[in-house]
Length: 385
Image (cartoon, rainbow, N blue to C red; front, side, top):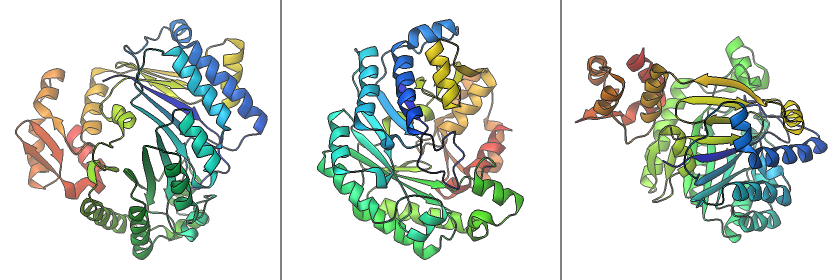
């Protein structure tokens, strides 16, 4: 599979309570300097990787993903500068998909038209919920009414594909409000839908509070895991009946609208990463840029090394990734191929999982059972440990 390009834009208007990513609120002058640094890194990427003794992924990339953070906060000309740097650096590439993450309240008619003119073919909207109270408790800046308005602007601009995100497990969420969010989302008929279970992470305000048993950030109003699993199963049935293919644990698509770029991560394809905190992977090694935007800018400007993490992917790590990433896809994995490639026997670990109905084995293909998708991590741990 051809490599993909990920460009990190770490700037936000505010920090959501559940967010544990390396993003934040920064002054406007830093954003301008950041654009300069990212475009310079892109244009000199071969030199940078050579200095760091890191092999460049082979072949021309065919997808671009601008994520964050909130890339839609950038001025249109800033996004155009970044994309121009990519196209100048990889002139032989044929771009199958160019995605921009956007918050609904940042989408305007003018921006939508400019994004499309700059070559954006797909927008991913962080809707998260259609309940104003849930959005407020999560620290989101948009309201439910901003979501269909953003979709209208993007459609009018000729955006070829739209993804809408929902989060299951937000503080204050009820079965009724969850059902309302699903039905409101389906009424907009996006080509792609992502549903993420609330990630309890110690590096987020809400996650830290939940882990410590506190009640700030409405932690006491987060629905329990059993309810979340039930609501997830209900979403699976509802989206299926609406014509969406459930192809990855958290992702559904209409025909021919699977996320091409994100599929590279699940199949361990190589990818380039540009910007602070961005990661790269060449098949056997991973490395990451400095997570601090100011430090990243200074490193690029002064010609200093900007890579702060480097990891050789061992055979055992690659095996584990093939299994747990591959099983996230509902197509499953070719178990015999993996066993031959890594010299292991995973069949011996299957009887209990098969008996419990956690997985299904059809010939050489191993899949998660559809009823166990919401507790997939437990299955991965039992299969790999």
